[in-house]
Image 1: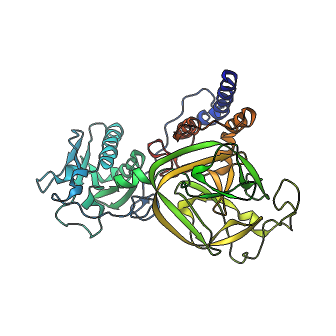
Image 2: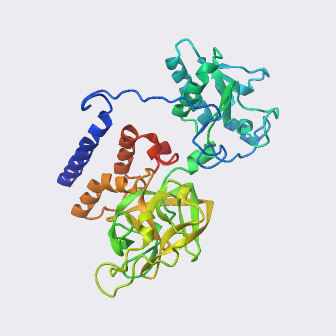
Image 3: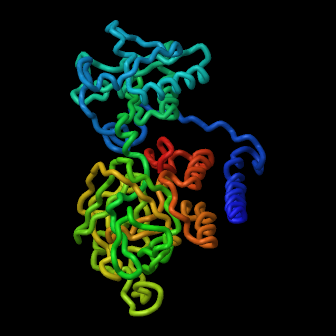
Length: 434
C-alpha cells in the first residue's frame, strides 16, 4: 500500500510540474522561475456591473429574502463592523450603516486593505449600509444588510472606477458603478453560500448497472459498472464504465439542486456547479446519436452518419442550462437528443459525486460529466488522470469516509493559483466544497 501511495504522490508531483511553467510564464522572456507579475486591474466603466448579470439572479447576489428589522428574528444575522480602516457616514446616527451580514463584512474588510494599498493615506468610506428606514426600492438588499454603497475617504471621483474593480477583486458577489457619487456592492445571503456550493447528485438519483437494473446513487459502490459515454467529449457510443471512487460524498448535507426536465419526461437533478452535456438543438430533434447493436462492449457501437449536432455538443454548468437547450438522453440502449423544457430549484439533503473511468455518467437517463467547479470538462478529466490511473492499477477504492476526496480538494487549491477565477463557477469552490 505504501508503494501505491508513493505512485500516486509521484503522479501528482508530475502534474504540478507540468502546470507550473504555465503559471510562471507571465513575465518577460521564457518566464520559468520568475516571480509572477501583479494582475493587471482594469477599472469598471460607468454604469458597468460585474458579473454581467442582474444583481438578484443566481449568478450574482441572488434573490432577496425579506427585510430585516430590529424586532425580527433574522436581526441576529447582522453583525456590526468597527473596522477603524473604514469610515462610516452613519448620517442617521443609529449605527445602522455598520450593520451587515458576516459575508458582507468580510468582503468589506478585505476591500479596505486593498484601498489603503492602492492609495496610501486614503480609506474606504461607506455611505449606505443596512437600511431600516425604507429609503431604497422594495426588494433592495440594503434591507438585509447584504449591500453597501461606497466611496473613498477623499471623495475623489476619479478613483471610483478603480474602486469598483477593487471591490470585484475583494470578492463581492455583485459590483455596480451605479452613480458618479458611489459604487454599489452586494453579496449572497448567508443561507445561499452554505447551500448552493458544490457539484454533485442527490442520493436518490438513479444510475443504470451493467445487468440493466437501476440503483440509487446513495447505494452505489466502487467497482460497480454504470452507463456512461465511451469518449471524453460525449460523442461516443455508450458503455458500462467502472465506478473508481467518490470525489465527494456527504449524506447529511443540504444544498440547492437544479432539476432539469426534458420533453421525454426524463429529469436530472444536480447542483449548480456540476457540468452537463448540452447542445443547441433547434431543428435537430429527430437526429439519433447512436444505434443499438447486439454485440460488442459498446452500446450502440454501430454508427450512423455523423450527426450535425455533434459539433455543438459541449459541457456547461447546470446553472447555465436553459429551456430550449438539448441534452443527451438514454432510452433503453440508444442515446438521443431531448429538449430541456424547464429548470427548477429544490433543497435536497445528501450529495454524491461518483468518478467513473471514462469521466461521465448517465443519471436518471441523462448524460452528465463526473466533474464540477471548473468550466472545462476536458481539463478536469486530464488533471484527474493520475487518480483514475491509480484506482485502475490498484483497483477501486475501499468505502471512503464522508466528505470531499483529498485529491480534488488539492486540485481546487492548485487551480485557484494557476487559473483565472473566470474558469470557476462562482459557487463551485466556496468554503472548500465541490
